[in-house]
Amino acid sequence: MTDAAKVLDAARARGLMIATAESCTGGLIAGALTAVPGSSDVVDRGFVTYSNAAKIEMLGIRPETLDQFGAVSEEIAREMADGALARSKAALTVSVTGIAGPGGSEHKPEGRVCFGLASPSGTVTETVEFGAIGRDQVRAATVDHALALLLGALS
Image (cartoon, rainbow, N blue to C red):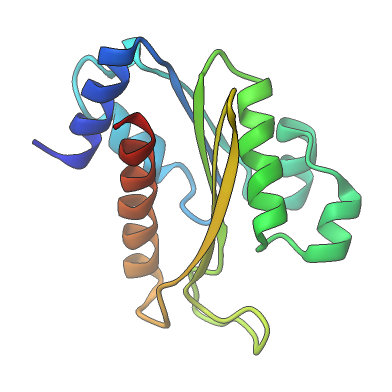
């Protein structure tokens, strides 16, 4: 059974809906979940907010937070996850924002991804440094980690 299928089964067992808020993955987390037949009873929606304007318009992140911390930050990951929770029928949301590469900077290197996980009981964030392993590999590792976070929250 795939990790996505495990997430769906766990959410189904708890009667919870899931939503995603994605930047660097461009919808790959929602894609992994909805690739599983029968996912429509658990997956509410996915927000693909690649641009800063989309993050503000679709998820309600604050421009001040963007200005102060930048798009790749735990603060933005928190606001993305919270925004997805507020703007969906989901009881559990995951958000990702990062630098898949190529490129990056000294302060925000390639492979840095910030994650948010929100539910009515609160929001947690974390940053994972996947390293300069290549764009496709960073995105795939981000999907895997997001699914693991969802599964952990449902366990």
